[in-house]
Every structure is written in C-alpha cells, then in structure tokens.
Image (cartoon, rainbow, N blue to C red; front, side):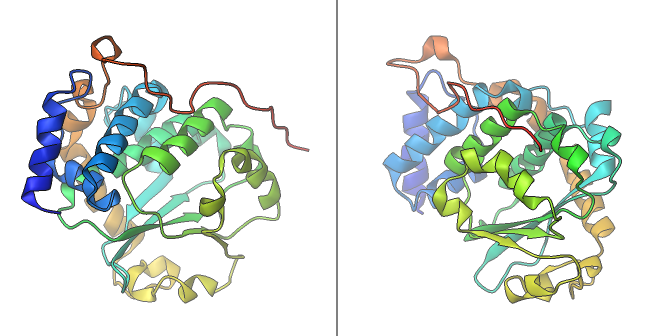
Length: 281
C-alpha cells in the first residue's frame, strides 16, 4: 500500500457523514491490506465493519475493560496474541478457558473481550501480518458451556468474523477436542462459510499434530513451545496494553454508524432474519 492509497481512503471517509472520521491510521492500513490494496474493496470493508458493529451492541458497546463483568472474563479466559510470527509471516492467537467452572463463563462478555484484544492489536501493531492463525484450546470446555451460548450473538460473531473483520484468516486450530465436538459444530455450522470450514484443523488431547502446522518457536512454554515465554508472561503484557488503550475502547464515537446521516439505502449485513433453533441431545 502507498501513502496515496491511505490519502484516498481518508478523503472518501470525510464525505461519509454516517461513518466515524477519527479512524486510526493503523486500522485503515489493515483495511487496505486485507483488501489487497483495492480502494473500492477497502471502502466496502470499512462500511461493513462499522455497520455490523452498530448492529451488534451486545458485543461492541459498553467496553470499559475495568468493569467487573469483563474483569471476571480476563481472570478466567486467556486471549494471547503470540509475539513470534510463523515463517510465512502469520500471527498466531491463542484462546483458552482456564476453568471448567461454567458459573465463571459468560458467552456474550467472552466474545466482547475477544474483540477488545483484537481492536487493541489492530491499532498497536505497526507491522501487519500476512495472515492470522487462531488456536482455540478446548481442554476446559464442557457440555454445560454449550448451554451458555446465546445464538443471536453467535450469529453476529460469525458474520462479523467472516465478513467484516479486517484480517486474512489462514487456518483455525482446535486443541484438545472433546468427544462432543459434533455437538459444538452443530451450533457453528449453520453460520460457517464453506471456505472457512476447510481451514479447521482438530487436534486430540495429548497429540503433537499442532506442530505440523505451527512451529514450536511461536508457542508458549505450556504448549511445548520454544519461545521462552509463558502464557502468564504474554497475558500480563497484553492486559497492560488493553488498559493503556482503555479510552480508545470506550470512545463510542470511534465505532458507531449514524444511520440518520446515511445517504442511500441502509446496508444489509445478514444480521437480519431468524435462524433455526438448535438443541443438545
């Protein structure tokens, strides 16, 4: 991308009264990179990014990381952007629930916290990776956790991550997959795009198959990694960073679309409509 690309996007934004005008340069660069430097695709992605967020206030509003509800999430779930990139310049992100105690798990606040870390990453990381590789450790995930899933919020999460999140997803790894994985997938599959489903890799407990995809140098010590860092080390660094960006996160003017100022038809995002009810056998 070039400085002229960034200038063109900024000039276009100034003419969009319904969109925020205080978008961080690092975030704008993410839109361009994710759109392969196509100005038109970048405009479309920006439009979708903010419109979807405005239609999902459960996830993207009221995001003060100091509030007690989110502090409980941070204590019981790790959201760890790992510092070492893969050989092909991809960022690895580790997500894990630290306890099987379902009473300490809140699905909506968990999703909210997930995107708090994502948003801090997008403005604090100056070097944009070529791709993203999330790892979800399911060791402490139980059948009872499934009962805490809020389907309308899951739908919004899936639409946003697959359509509006400015990253290039390369692979998704599920660690310590439980015997009830098919029940987990029953929740996700209705909202899962075929090309994303093909990126899924499942790893059984005590297996070493993850290393076939993610080098040990990228992983923390607890996962057989050679980075020399523990999950606690990485978590402390990122919790400090989240608190540093607290004002940025809670500034609603940075995230909201003003539909009253939009010219033309309201953007359709797929958030509308219903979905079939799922049950756990």
